Image (cartoon, rainbow, N blue to C red; front, side):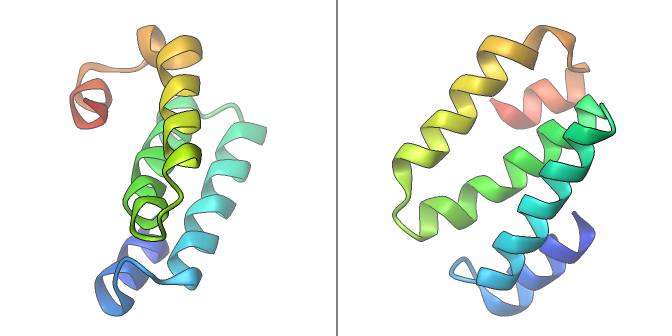
Length: 82
């Protein structure tokens, strides 16, 4: 996630490298059952997808988080999500 954030800051919202880093973080966090990290990586990938006009994918991730995970997330992660 830190790599994704750094790449996003350096390359902007159209960075494919940042998108790939966040997607890798999402996959790894999900496999390791690290819910907070999965949610934060999902939140981080949002602006990159939005910047690439991939609105439906952003909505799909948001729906997944709200329907499956939101109640189990800590208050800080929930507030960042909203």
